[in-house]
Image (cartoon, rainbow, N blue to C red; front, side, top):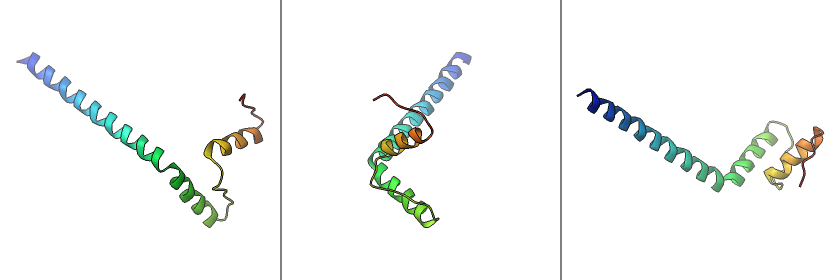
Length: 76
């Protein structure tokens, strides 16, 4: 009887892990599919709040420029 409950508890934990993995993968797919749109939305908010935003650049280019401004050189 105790062994049966332990197996059921382990099964329930595995079901939760599988659900979490599926949700995480779905989130990655959505973020990948809409990354340009999300970046444009953040740029619009930044501009509205008084900052400057350049939506034409890719996020990797922006990151490299920020690192270079901090004095960190990346090998390409």
